[in-house]
Length: 585
Image 1 (cartoon, one colour):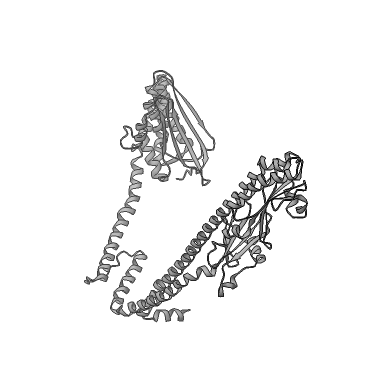
Image 2 (spheres, rainbow, N blue to C red):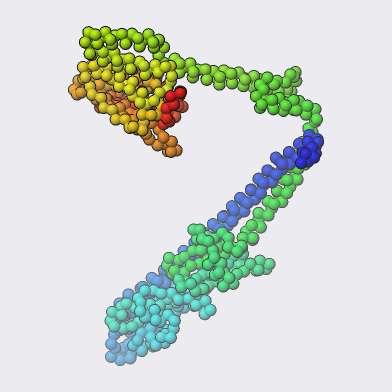
């Protein structure tokens, strides 16, 4: 391994640059052209399939138009009372019947063939034994035909196609005769090629078509493969197997055994038309792209050789110095600078590197270390700076004096104040248990209730699970103070209520959180005041102080949330990570 590495290291820079040019320039270029070739193939295939599909839809529309014309003629004959009257009338003589057929019946049917020369024959078969030219025949003549059973039972138009005989007929029971108790079947024979030419006449070169009726029988197949491309022609059985295996997407199968197939079902006849096309013939036009890729690769290779030859070795020493200095900086040595007087591009790069190194060092010193120092200073500045021993001794003396003179109110206030400051100062620590923080708040509220002659009520609902959790010092008292000063003190129509709630919650990541809510039913705030409540524009600073300390200690994801409605009260919510309080902290 070392020998291989050494051989690689011994390669001249000029040769290394050639390898780099090939790896970073030539290969991506080839990949790009291959991608372009694949995209071009897909575009050609999609465009060709859209063209075939459009032609197919047009063919089906044309065929449906013809079939609808024949259906309208069938309806005209079926519901024509005059024709039904001629066939159902009880004639007194053969001459009278013949006269009616010749003068009334024949002209009406002959006119249909006159205006539609693609209709070979129109015949009405009846069970009265009448026989006249090709227009009227006994029904016994068709009882052995495949369409007789279904046609004799339904007045619905039914089409029958025979690919071998090249015939297309429609047959149905005449409802007007059926109502008279006479079985009559109208038979319309249409020119096979006239109908199927709608599909076969519009085929594009080197494509094939197959048409299946509603029962899946082949009624027509054709293709336009010629000369050498004839090998792509599919017989009916193989094409049907491909159709069964096809993975259809919006009536299109892009690839099944090397063929693309599109289909369209006729809503009029129920026929399904399939057009297939060999993918190889479509993609031949994309072969020129391969030649372009080869030429581009040769040109790129020649360019890489020329670039490496033109690169001189005089740049290697300065690049090496720059590389070594970067390695030192990477290892934390920001004193690694390069002395140079060069003013070319590499010299500018070296000067920029030296400047960047110095700025990075200054930024680390000023921002990173300064930020740590700033946090420590801010946390110290947020704690009260008074002499606890002197304060406690003074409060203790006041308490004993109050007891001596039997001033219980003064003693109670003094004890509450002593407990409040003892918890607030917390021996200079930033954190304490939530139970201690709650006790501190209760001491403050006891003083405030005495000062307010118990003019407001306090409701505390704290879960036992929250009490041992760690809490920042002095986060409840400022919020309670804010609720008193800006909430319930402004009430005139009802008694104030301060509610303190705390419970454990779980965030989206499954982490436990302490959720604390301080609510009042006071005057509330308007929307603008709520938006500025925690900003420098706010008149107060207690809640803002709590918000800043929480974000400073726990991160920007944790902060106060304020909800308030004018004349309805305010709720402030605090959320911070739930972790057990360690008294050593």
